[in-house]
Image (cartoon, rainbow, N blue to C red):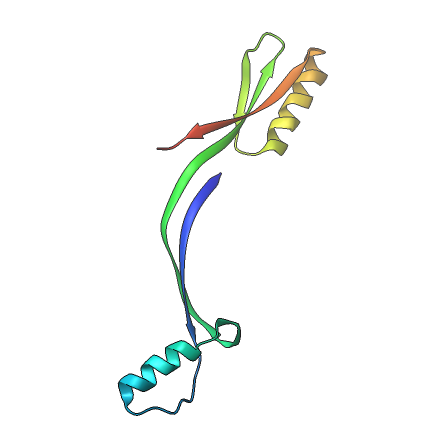
Length: 100
């Protein structure tokens, strides 16, 4: 399955600055902030959206659906078993089910 996730991270860094007042110190600290030297703080994930769901569909030579699976391994296993039992071809198709 494919998801879109918005991640928000906080970073912190202690910076010493020479300033005329607290407002000036804040401005200079923001200017001096270097994300490559900062420590990672808390993080959260927002707006997790399922973009599409992948399904693996097993069909025989007549295009009859033999099974629908969430993972390719199980679908291939089913197709192999069908071929072994019947001697007929079986195919695995990867399909997307849009979740809008």
